[in-house]
Image (cartoon, rainbow, N blue to C red; front, side, top):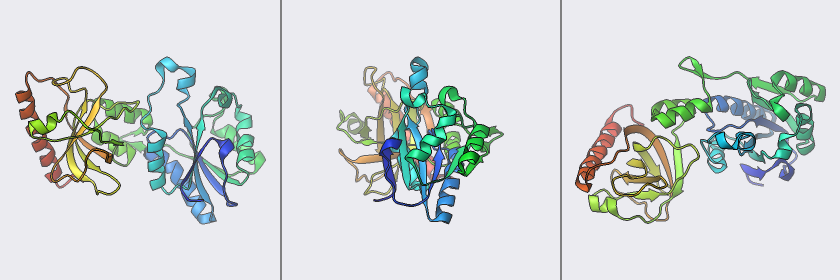
Length: 316
């Protein structure tokens, strides 16, 4: 078995005979508040020579209970796994939030975990975590059930930034408003997109600014516009770039947004590359220009803006 490993559902988990220290939560975005919970599980696992695990859920419960107003997720399970791996997590269990799972009562939740995970040695949650049918379970109930079953539980206080608790909702609001630097502070890392470069219409090359075109459709779309970014793949270290994310109203009819990245310098990336794009600075909102020539002039200014931002000592 190689780590970190992923399991689709508690019923499919098979682990070696080592203690399991499990952080539980939706963890959408894996922001600094989430990281505080997960890092406690990792530390405990390292001290005990056990495994650090994360139990998370997909889709968001709102998809079941309020489909018309469902919460738009910051990241896919695959993107979440990438961040969890960097935090030192050994095991990721993604539990489908189905009607059957939603019917599990708060009192039955921990016994079910123990049946599926017999070497469960500790549970780690945020202080505001809710669970069980009707979200009736809270941390005091979990502590009471855990005491009866001799399972240590640690509740982690919420992490605050700028006088308010960090939350996935704050991250969503900041991304939609173009407050990228604030969102990255909440996340504790650079917001990122992943995707495969596809052939484009070569309009960027015609304008003098060739782009890497990435169809990328997150549930929660950041503000459409131009960004300073870093871009790379598994073989190429990240390099500075400038990106446009949006529907390209000057040259295309309204459709699905596209992420277009222009590398600021020599580019070893091409069609078929599996890109990771780190979003660093919002430069301007997307707009429609009167002509392609006007667009060309603005793209040149966008490149200059990005280059100027990367030259600043604070740019990382």
